[in-house]
Amino acid sequence: MNLRAQSVERPKRITTTALVAPVSWIAVALLNGNYFECAMTGINVTVFTNHLCDGKSPQCQDELDKFPCGRATHVPQSDSNDVLATIRAESQVLGWLLIASIMVFNLLLICVARCNSPVSYLQLKFWRVYAQWESDLLESNMADHAEKLAERNLKSFFQQMPPEPVTTPPNQAWEKISSLYRFSTRDQYYSILHKYVEKCHDPAEARDHRMSSVRSDGPDTANPSVLAFVDEGKMML
Image (tube, rainbow, N blue to C red):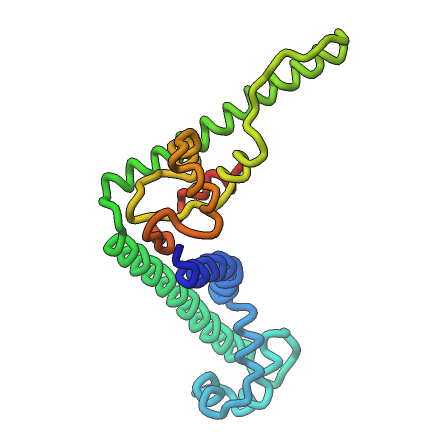
């Protein structure tokens, strides 16, 4: 597997996810305008203060920092309200520009990901449907199997009799299907579970499959961004 590409791809995804909350907070704060009012009225930049106090009272620039607090000033209330309204309007413009830029950036990322996708649109659509069904059925089967195992154990305990045989996957099998999916240009598997089922009972593939944690079965590459959903089912369990 291309470890260098994977080491770059995963931090990018983590960073993108981590930036969602702070960027959303900044956008909401800009749309509200209160934080921007406090920040901008405290800036001692002559050009900016002249812009805000253009046509206002002569004391406007000297007492600009008092406007957001509502403290009594020598500036008419109408002038201070106009200045604050101007700052809030500029803050909202910046907020909408931030939101628009994020939307455009995400749209470009989606377009690039779709254009560079190693699979066609219809196959990708099928892949998503398969991943959803596998996740739902896996959760359902785990619940059923756990219930049967619990019933078997309780029955054996209370009746003080040997337990009935129940087949449960070994620890090694659980570890293998819990690993992250790795896209391969040679082998086509729709999930790590799909790969395990296809290879676990094949003696010719057993040795290679045991080495899958340290080397690839073929010319693996970093997972394309359009296939990020493949591991999402396991993360939700």
